[in-house]
Length: 315
Length: 276
Image (spheres, rainbow over the protein chains, first blue to last red):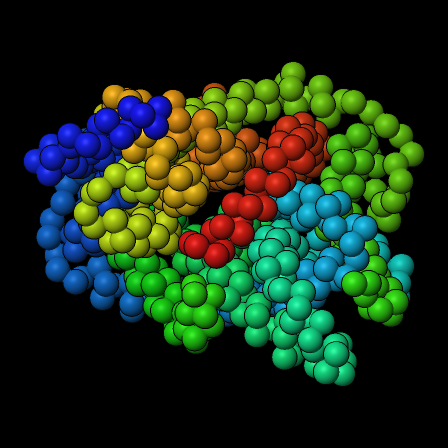
């Protein structure tokens, strides 16, 4: 084969090479086309269409959807509804609290796994099971555990003497939020663990060796070696989770139905309800567009807080 | 280098505590699916069931449609995964190996796309599917699932294609292989780990997706597992036994998949973390 290559190379001219390159470019765009069409049709077009919808009053009639342009009226209506601001507030504090706890627990568990060589592969498999679990199933599971009449959580807490009578976990505002957060943390912390564990394994062993020779104790090694080296992984895990948390829908849909009242109604749930229960498509589109802007804003804030660290990681 | 003893002991205690916390709810769901209704609603509950029964499994797959839900999920997830691998590998190859312009903007564009929540695309898609009469159909889910999982697959596969030496591509060209042939015959077989990773991630994402499946396919014969379970409720009480019986059966294949492909999942998460 090397002979053939030499032969070709010797009579190849610049003109021929240019035509080969042109041919490759055509082939390249040809190979991008199927993915490009699907992505444009299912993401770009609908996103732009949603923006257009949010400036229209949309009625579902016998002849299909009737659009009437009404400027920013949908946004005015949405922003003057207390329920919208309640959903924004709930989504924001819910996301911040759960992601912060997940990052803390994730780091703790990843460090524990790192210290226990024997259980490492078993642990990784156990961590991947909640990750692959259908959220709706986990919501049903927790709704049975939290049940106010025969839930096992009340039985355990009563048995340990923490509570005197059963608590209706999803029936009271404060406990409903805590119950929702706990179920979410249970399901998504393992994802954080896997990312942080990979980050831990990429830290060169010499760093620890050097720190130990310098006489650093475990705590000092953590703060001066492990944590700085891990900041990139923490930033990425946090970013992924914030994106997911801001769009939370499945878990409250099944576990609390957004209640009690509208305590646990997230933005995605409010949007879904406006669109498909109340059939207010224009208002729903305004909620959806506002949610996207909020998510992009949250990403920017989170990334700028971690900017230096992600930059380091990329090098 | 062995860790100090006290560190290992703390590691064991912390780790075992959390492993138990992660696994206990699964144990509870599993035993509940085998308990008669009287035991399911007993308080205080028995931590180890006294009576075992298969009646909930008979209900879930005889009287109710859990078999159909699982079949729908399998069809939708496998078809979507196939298209994601096919289109994603072609696009990933083009971005990694072909002299096209604007590669960096394309990759960043893909990243931004994957940030958008389903909420913002769901209504226009719903209207479109309604107009063409595709609500309650497999394509109603396969098409959006393919689109939403393509960005990650393209990123992952591009990274794998970059690891294959470029000289191979040049050599194949010299021997007269077309671009598509060298992609299909040389590059694709060399990037099977990347294909595994993209496949497992896509499959799990499709298997667990709820929002679009709920809105696009609410008909009882077209529900996927999450929709079937979420919309499944009895007249007076939640039929936990039946729900858990169906859930246990639908969890088993995924757990097997995860155990077999755990290496590729971890490498996918790591790649996503480092290069994504």
